[in-house]
Amino acid sequence: MSQLIVNLEQAKFECTFGRGCDGVCCRNGRPPIYADEADRIDKNIHKFLPELRPEARAIVEKDGYLSHRMRAGRRRLRVIDGWCIFFNQGCVLHRIGSGEGDKFRYKPWVCATFPIARGKHDGWYVRQKGLNAEIWDLFCLDPNASAVHAADSLKDEIALVRAHAEQSTAPENRQLDVQ
Image (cartoon, rainbow, N blue to C red; front, side):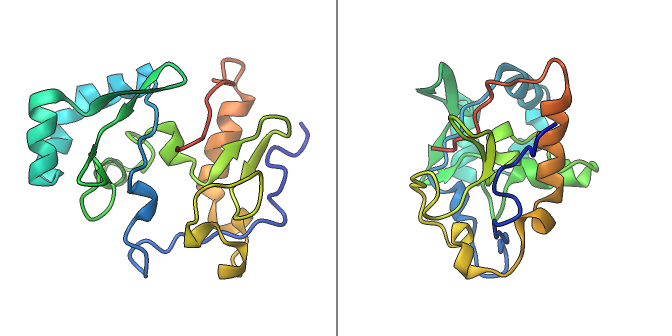
């Protein structure tokens, strides 16, 4: 298999959530939700509700966690007060999954693999400021802001993308665009 992530050797990335970042990637992040993701969240919503912000919990209980906004034919997560419905001092889905031994268990694909994205012509890549017309001006996407190589900091995310790419039933059309 050719190199799966084309700029992996050059890319720099370090998530600093809780160490200077308050989770800005979850701010207005409305990721599209695939049917299997919605099914997994639906079956476990009872675990997430107690962990949500009170205003988010009220909306989820009344109207659900999916908005009517669409991307690529898929509904997207709701945003409440500018934050993802599942954000409460960090990602509730991540926190619950981590507690069960798999931080990606409940997270949408787009969130689980961030900042890895699928390019239109050149395979997968690590999102970086100035690369492929990156529109998010996030500190963590600035390769000059960190000396940490993405190949080191994103081992789990790379393994997730690689596992999906290697499966014969891989969701090849799963886009990783969080906009």
